[in-house]
Image 1 (cartoon, one colour):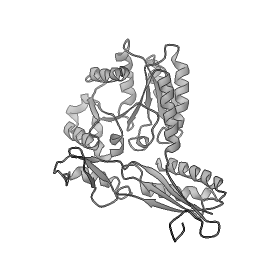
Image 2: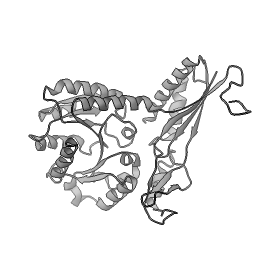
Image 3: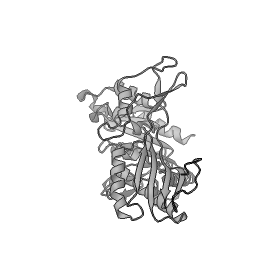
Image 4: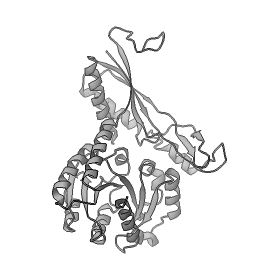
Length: 234
Length: 132
């Protein structure tokens, strides 16, 4: 930069200083907006689910398949580092599912999901889908940074993981619309403080809604279903 | 380690800028990383140092990171407050800005309510490129 006035003029021979002020995520953001439009054109709502591995994302979706029958239809884009196993579990429930394997990457990005949306559209059949779930790679850190084009973002923590997760992984909670506490049937056996988890999540994000569910006992499933139905009626 | 993906994106963006400006060497890149961006600055620097070796355009490039402190906003009166001191996002103190705030809840200096919540700070920006 020029020492005299701070202008953008070149100083040293051929040297150039350019102010950019652009997000590193700009490209991802643009692709995400395209994904969102694509999902809307399909008449669907996109939901991005983020949690650590084993929190119960796939299990909740399996239980949702049983509970949603006759109410609404959905498809699932599964993100994993390896294997087709989660998509197979979902398909066994009669739900269209496509698997994205990242081959090592710790998160889904808008580009990967773009391909997934086309595939799920082809798989879904003529009646289309009401909801497209995007089950992110199991990881509470990295997926939180990448917008995929979703209308709603859900962060999920299971009871055995502990109630300090909002404080330890704030970014995932700051950016989410709903906080699901899963495996509620295990509450009697673990030192999980509902108060700590919900109070800290609310301080990070006053607008976040909180749901407690158990896919095993069915606890909270009616609230989960009415949350999903509420998204459709908008 | 999504920092690797972010650095790859950064380099792609800078490559385009270099092409448009007919530059053959990038001398310095300035990046701003917000306190609530979820990016670990040490990992970001590590990824940059590793990846720059693969591309002659970047081999001599300095990475300069601006890391502004956290800002909180009061939900009652709307006043904004600079968060306490130290910068988060290093390996030694991951997320410390948020964590220390959660552990010792401070009241809003304007109205006294304990209703502070993180404000902005999730940005990851390419600020400036110096090249020749």
